[in-house]
Length: 591
Image 1: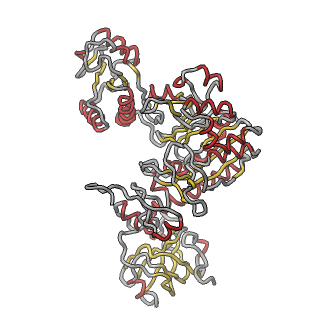
Image 2: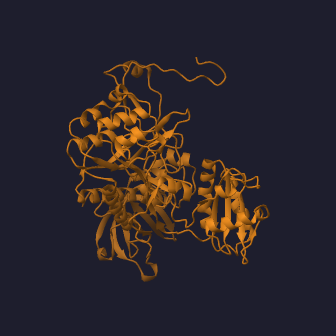
Image 3: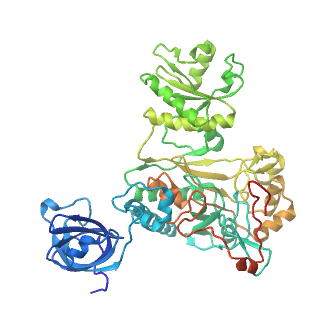
């Protein structure tokens, strides 16, 4: 028999009754029924119940070993009595009567309980992540992640995509975040950059003739943490296709996602094709370019109605209305609570009216609205008796942000929100450029995107009016990816970067490899890179992306388990020709 096990804990079934087995795993739980011990033994595959009677040489030892001790147990598989069958676990019909054990790994007192699971602060969980990952929820999340990645690989291979690897040590690239820099020992004063994305390399693979590429790619960005973004590093399904337009990318990704979500969330609804929504429409109807389409409500811009209004709270401001049908029986507390919600998200308040059965407006601001106002509002929002209308007024960006949150929350409270569904959409027709804080023109999205209209658009249109072949895929209010039809023409690329303030020499210096390649026959190509971590977060129904990553950094970009970032010895700095400049002290100059 094998030194450690003949079977895994989770694989034993009724067909194994009367078989002698050897198992190894962690002491998950123990129950002492007076002369009989029941031990739950756990390994990666699951849990099996061990039975140890007082006449067994293993009885005394198992009665005192702490939880999470690693054991080897030899015994015989028995069928459980009918009243003792546990239908909640695959091994619930059997138990193993133990004759001999061996302690393979002792366990110190635990900083927190693995089973039963208790609430533990994130700092403690990440410091002892190896224990946290033993807990069932976390263990299942990581198993799910592995299965999702395996399935993605299978689906991409089946569609003729080649899995190719791109460099980790490369040059800096303007992807919109800060690079992580790696000093070069052989080239003093120079640095590599860890890739924010394999953007240029995957385009170069298309120029090299590989046609269809994918990679489960690690990406590194020195940016702040948030619930759907891990600081430091993340993984994405990096995809690029030659001789492809926007719709080719959409069809491929929709097929993969529809199959993936049907496989791992079979009880949830996913429909395809995914809606295509222009960036302008998304901002107008939902207040965000990451709309949660499970909320069956839309915003309406009613600024024109109040442009010359005598109602000073709205007059001359951007005003967005949120009509909610069938709210006639909602209590006053519904409106008050929505107001409190809006204030929590930065609003000064939330105005509202309700249309009664006679078609009259009631509510706190009804008396300030003229007959003409109410008629126009009813027409604009398609209001009927029983409709409630919430209003946000002020700066357009602020109103959009607040009312996008109000839209989703109101839908949940009014019963107009779909549970147990994944609602995807494509956001398309992004502006090519945006105005930076200093008034200059900058890229609003991926700088390597093809402008709609090509070179002619760049030369004849106002920069802020130019649209790009850029797109995002969004699911349940979470952006899973950005993508674009790529700019594969040197002439168009030089002009696009010129508008953003780069001269030809700067473009050649920063993107020389790609520009040079485009001079030697570059095919039209397009791509996308959905975030693997976010996909798993959705499938696992986790609110925080760190719950789906085995060893994440904390919110301050620290690895509490391994102690990173850490101080580097002076000798190593000298070898790299580096010296440190400490930041100024809070109460005085730098030392």
